[in-house]
Amino acid sequence: MLKISIVTITKNSERFLRSTIQSVIMQKGINEQYQLEHIFVYAPSEDDTLNIILEYQNDYPGRIKLIHEKEAIGISHAMNLGIEAATGDIINHLHSDDSYQHDHVLLTVTNAFETNPEFYWLYSGYRLIDHNNVFQKFQLCEIFYYPELFNRSVVPHPTVFIKKSLFEKYGSFDISYKCAMDYDLWFRIGNDNQPIIINDYLVNIRNGIYSTSNVLSELTGDEAQSLRQKYVSVINKEIDAIKDVQNFGFNKKYFSDVFYRMAQIYNKKQINDKKRALKCLSLSIRLNPYVMKRYIYYLFIYFSNNYQW
Image 1 (tube, rainbow, N blue to C red):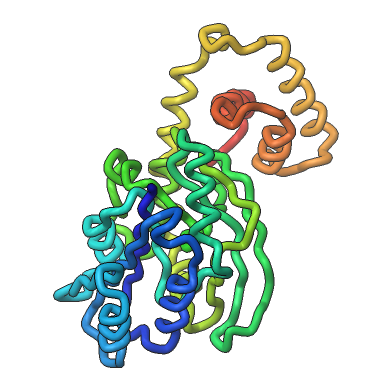
Image 2 (image 1 turned 90 degrees about the horizontal axis):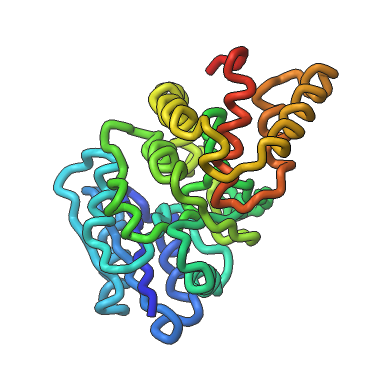
């Protein structure tokens, strides 16, 4: 039976914390189809955050864990403390102002991993709400393919569930990043690990001035740009390693047809931006997701003389 560890970091979180915890408690299938622990990393607060956690810990002994962070070093450090304390097979970081969207989120996640044991992480769409819990919009999840990370992050962190073994292999969040720590993680794990995409809205993400997710996204800019520059070398090395198409059993004629189609579209200026042309064409190729990224690298080769990061 799989065990899920939910990590919630807190600091002055009393306003929305109860709804976060209740959304976990209401989940179906606990101890029947999966085991569950909810880990709270508590930073010194000036409100009733600690008492709320202790109240639920008393009501659900053994399921709720409390870690005291002696000083608030940063979000990355706090999330890493939760990862270290986790005893589950799968970890989700649920912000203290977000919540699960319905009562079978964890069943959906469990079934996805049990059905696809070769995958190590997943993410989904989400439901955006404001600080009064008023619905704003549904955001569909986007397909994950590694090169798109050099444009933007398509992965909404609160919807991500990751096997702990992946953290053990690639490391936890880089504490040198104040805001883009999750973006950095997608770069590290995404090159070799295709995620499961859940066609559902698993999480309510809060929007507005009170939102943890929103504040982080607004502060990420400079860090995100440095990350893109840092990981360009990953693609360059991969391209060098797979220049011989025949070594991977790929069909040269198929590639020549693809490149010809790319040239047609670009030269006709139906898509003026090379990055967008690359994305649209690569997504049009119907391939096994395990090898899709290698085809995409060949598409990068095609534009290598003109494309500027």
